[in-house]
Amino acid sequence: MVTTRGRSSPVLHAPPSPHAGSFLRIPPFPGAKIQQFPRGEKSAVDWNSVASDLRRHRVGGTFWGARPRVQAGWVLVRDVSAVGRASEIANGAKVVLWTDLDAGDAGECDPWHVLSGASAVIVSSEDEVRIIAALLGVPAYLSFDGGLVRDELPIAEMLAAVLPTALENPFTGDAMTAREAIELCGFWRRLVDANRGIAAGLGFAFWKQEHVAPLLWSGSGRFSFVKSAGDVVPGATVAVWRSKVPAQVLSRLDHSGGCLVEVEDGFLRSRGLGADCIPPLSITVDALGAYFDPSRPSELELLLQDGSFDDDLLERAWELRQLIVEAEIGKYEQGGAVMERPARGLTHILVPGQVEDDRAVQTGGCGLTSNLELLQRVRAQAPGAYILYKPHPDVVAGHRRGDVAEADALEFADEIVRDHSINSLIKMVDEVHVNTSLAGFEALLRGKKITTHGVPFYAGWGLTTDLGPVPSRRSARRSLDELVAATLLVYPRYLDPITGLPCPAEVVVARLAAGVDSDPGLLVGVRRLQGKFMRRLRSLVQ
Image 1 (cartoon, helix red, strand yellow):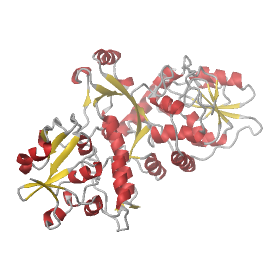
Image 2 (image 1 turned 180 degrees about the vertical axis):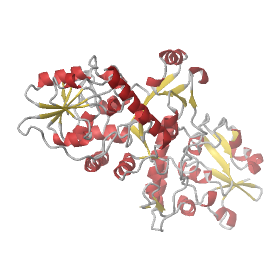
Image 3 (image 1 turned 90 degrees about the vertical axis):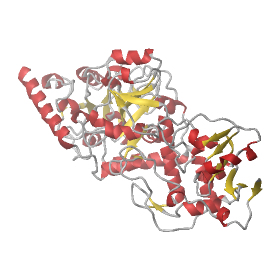
Image 4 (image 1 turned 90 degrees about the horizontal axis):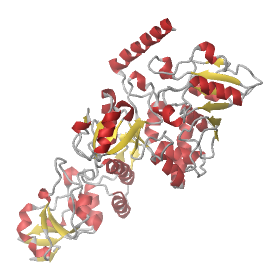
């Protein structure tokens, strides 16, 4: 017998109480040091607005869980004690036990996904799925007095029982409303959903894996790093650090029908060199191709070409740019005293060197791969300027290719600068000429005039003087705030070194500004000693 809820039943009056009020919780990202929102002081809450936010972001419960195949119109049974009564509400529809859903080794399912195909669900009164059913408008039934009773408890009463009225931001410790926590959970859901289907990672150095795994995690178990194509199921999607994977292995994956997703360092990386084995705090993940390869579109290029940026996002971009500039943050370093202008009356041009065999140079240089040739081109463009050449820090550290003999460099440059930070040099000069260097983007943030000789990702949008063969695909004209919004807010992924949680860009900028980063450990010291040895060896053979 199916009835509506009688007001005399204390059991049916009771709201759900899942996990002592943890309906809204942090996903168990690999390596995360926090898994619950810290509690704050109580405040007034508009529960209808909270309900609307939960529906929009589809968070609450195990929203990161597995997504088994769903069917239209099925009746789901969560309360197995009432399975014998399911036929009373099924009306011929298929009855499915929640415990029989095919989640593989993923454990819990995503209830928002599972309920999307349901015509009804049978739950116990304490079950948090009862809340999600109410939010989605899926009829929920409770077992009472030998029958099934339609759950009609108002959603506001349910939410008031399971959501605290105030929390603390896990990154800052500041007060955080339930609605702000829901928005943060929505951020995490979008990340997890974007990773669904990625089976493994290939080509990732062991010292990067711990920091990369949370940003590639798809909501279940651990993220797997494999050593060969044979460790991957044919046809699977694989995240690859392409420069570290042999060409024949990539070819084998391609022929197996799999999809390769390219992962690279992000634009706000760390307070140290990747060549010194300092792990990244941000990465880029692109299913179309590397963002620095202009031979084909990337997700970043499509975002800049076709994306839309609302006022709130542009305001965030403006504020983030101010924070970066004020804190003097670059990809590898921070701060540094401003260098005095060596030749007061002349135009000062900075030419950043690059690692010549780096993929960004090999692809984005479009034939220009030599640092010496770049210097020649800059001198030809600006014969009367004072040119400062700064070798790439990986080259100076002795780890990578791209060294230019001092006599050769000074044939075209007026000065070679090694000890000043790139930020201090950018502040001093009038212009920056680059092949594909990220220093050009960092100089754009600081309002400098940029000339590109290759085709970096920021070329072709109306913000730079472009001498390289920019693809005709890049026809949109973008503001600096739009470029920042796409490049630093929407496209990359960031990891907070304190909590171990994926985070918005502003958190990593704040950590870098405060000097908080990962502990480099013994490996970094060994790498730096190796670099010194290699530099010494090269000096002996020159």
